[in-house]
Amino acid sequence: MRFRSLIVAFVMIGFMANAQINTEETDTRDILESMAENLPDDYDMTELVDILEKYRKHPINLNRTSVEELKTLVFLSPLQIGNFFTHLKENGQLTDVLELQSIDGFDIKTIQALLPFVTLTNIAEYQQLNFKNIIRTGENDLMMRFAQTLQKQKGYTDLPGNRYLGSPERFQMRYRYHYSSILSAAITLDKDAGEKFIGKPFGNIALFKLGKLKKLVIGDYTLQFGQGLTLWSGFSFGKGPDVTSVAKKDLGLRPYNSTNEYSFFRGGAATINLFKNVDITPFVSFRNLDASQKLDSEGNLVQATINQTGLHRTPTEIKNKGVLAQRVFGATVQYTKNEFAVGAIAYHTNYKNRFITQTATYDRYSFTGKALTNLGLFYN
Image (cartoon, rainbow, N blue to C red; front, side, top):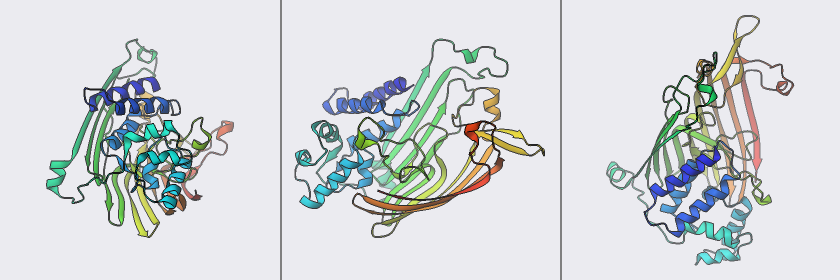
């Protein structure tokens, strides 16, 4: 799975790049190859490609960047990011990117990986949000992917009740729109191998950097705060052989552009600057999750487990599709100054049906009931 995703990522770079292979494209491939070793098997590599291609086209100004922005560069550890801002505080703005060599933790390999995605030049942005600018200067990307395993798999044979009902082809289509760094929109269609039809689309519209409104996402989004003990959706970067990269890099509110059908919220969320260094992120989400159900001793419908695969191939998987209504609402408050951050999280989750305790020993302390509230504190 990871190998196939990596191949698709390389093909995407080839289509998005010029015919002539240059050093920057090679660097991007090297980064993807090294990161793939430390990512989950089901990680959607195209999401990482989107991030790197965005910064290759619109480099980060190192003298005007933020901790949150540098966290999206997956090859930088929290320690390196902290050392970078300490250097800026003590020595002022960079006059040459080669000054990075004097920062503790920035070796030649890291700097070489960083160079294609950063600049010291002020780049003009279209900050005036109007219909004319949106049409004339926006960037559009369309990606389509088709895959099929040639060898006939066991799931397509006549297995009683478990046969895949669809065709073996997998199809994905992604459309992305960006207007400078203040507006984005996306829609994704996906059909997994063995499914009969294309599933419900993923999509969102997002606004950024509009005064006190730092982020606004309507549609599908992820929330990543602290180390994920209380609240985390989407995949995380950070795990690897390097001790300094063990900690997760929380990216706060982000539009969701992957094809994983479980790890996201659907609704609306915003990050608002209350006053200097203090942000609040309220959010609300309404989703119908895949889950297995059964009747309890009183004849009431109860939940047994939630299906996180997002696959709808067999009669059982189709029967369990979208049967569990979930509602989530809450907020986070965070104080950030340079590399220091402290915050609080509170959110409430409601389910349509009650969860029951399973018989397996490892399920003894699993959640039971229809509602739960989570509270947490985090700091870095």
